[in-house]
Structure formats: structure tokens, C-alpha cells
Length: 362
Image (tube, rainbow, N blue to C red; front, side, top):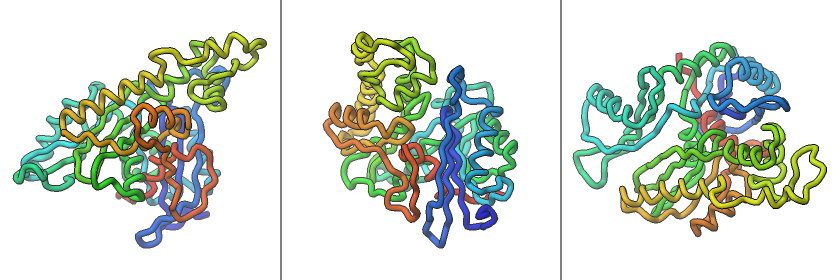
């Protein structure tokens, strides 16, 4: 059972709709991917998607089954990377004067409170200095990541229930971006716009070799498309998910499970103005326009898609056509050591990023 080996790294991404597990082996500076598994949290016909996120009682049995299939004993895992996803978290780059660590912690805690929805608990802030500010000699660029103590404690509670020793705990969108930038070159000129399309929201992140990092959460995501199908067809969550999986986000030319006549349904499924796709475009466009106004950088050279809906060719084509730049779904396994045969590969981006960073924290 390879869980006994200290070179094994585990990336665990517990999302609000699906759980992803990636196992890698580290040899020197290189990682070899040895396995990847994904499980939907909601699988029953009568189950209703929980907008507040899945409960521990639903998550723990699924994760234990995944570890069993992977041949891993959770208590034996020495190097774990896991992540927080959903609401009550934020990332932002700021420019600030150079200061001591104590002063930096105090200043960034105050800054973080401006960007995080409150849930009644205190803020938890981490940061990384990216380097000197090229525009102002006495300032540095700092990337801050913030969440709440309640959300962090809830995550640790799940890990304890699983008998997993906490290691690196990251934010999901940063984990996906880490997987990308460790294996892809950022452009010398212009920026890349990454869309991490989750179930409840889409994390938009803009990054470039020389340009300011920008992020914003968009309220349009996988649930938006499922809900749209449910309303138009008056069908269950499970049926809408199956229709979306088989026929795409717009679910054209399909009837709901058990329907007798599809002649009138095809037309009703055609997306109208302000469909989820159109709403997503509006949110992306608004975000890019704000970024351009704040930074003066206007050259988005490519869109990269992560997450469960990222494999939709329909979505890639839509974004590429709307913004007249290439758009591609990111395959986090491409070009890496190891042969992995899994479907919907973009949904594993965060889990791969976590496996690459996984380490023991005692």
C-alpha cells in the first residue's frame, strides 16, 4: 500500500458539488501523478443541491471510499494539501510600503476586512511578498489570501473526522492557478484571464509576468446552468445535472427524463437574452473593464478554464467568440509524468496544484 511511502503527496479538493483526489509521488524536484479520482456529492434522484455547501456527514463517507479505492489509509498520509472553496474567502494583490513582519500582519488584516464577507467570526490572513513594485521604489507587491476562522475550523473538523493530518491548506482558486503556472509560461506581454468555474461561483483571476494580479468572484457558475434547465423543463436537480452532462450547458434538442414529446421542448431550451452564458459574459466583461481602468493593461491574450464546467466546448467557443482571443480548458495532467485516464480533466486543476504543494506540518 503506497500510502506508507513518505514521498507520496495527496491533493484533496472538497468542493461544494464534487470531491477530487490526486495522488502523486515526489522524486527530487519532480512529481509523478499516480492516480486521480472524482466523486459527485449529490447523486440521488431526490437529493437537492445545498447552496450553503455539503454537510460533513455527506462528505466524510465519500472521501473515505475514495481513499480506500486509492489504496491509502488516511492516518498514514504524511504529506497532504487541501483547500477551502466556496464563500467567505478572497485573494488580492496590493502595493504597500516595506515594513516589519508585525506591521505587515496588522496592515494586511485591516486590508483583508474590506474584501471578505463576514460570517460572525474573525478573519484569517496569509500573504506572500511577490517582489518590488516596479513603479514605486519604496513599495512591494503583496498577494494576500483571507478567509474566516469559522470556515477554516470547519475544514479542519472534516480532516479530523477523516483522521487526516492537516498539511498545506490553500484557497481553491489559488491551487488551480498554481497547477497552471508551474507548467505553463505566462506571456511576456499581456495577461491571461483564468476562470475557475465552480458549482456556486466562478473565480476570475487575471495574471501576467509583469502585471498586477486581480481576482473577483462571479455569481454565475455551474449551479446557474443547472437551475436554468430545472426551471425551463420543470425537472429535478438530478435530471438537470444529467441533461447538462450529456447535452451541454444550453441543453439544446433534449427532453427531460421520462417526457413523452420533445417537439415543444427543444425550442423552450434555446437560451434567450440574459441566459447564464450571457450573464457570465457580462460579469467577465465588467471585471476586465475594471482591471483595465485600474492598471492600464488591456491585453488579455488568452482565457484558461478550470473546474467542472470547463470541459464544455460550448463554453470555450462562447468565450473565444465574445472576446476574440483563444480560450482553452486546462488539462492539469498534460505533459506531467504519469499516465492518468480520467474524464473531465479540468476539474482536477486544484487537486493537482495541492498535490504539488503537499507537505507535512507538525
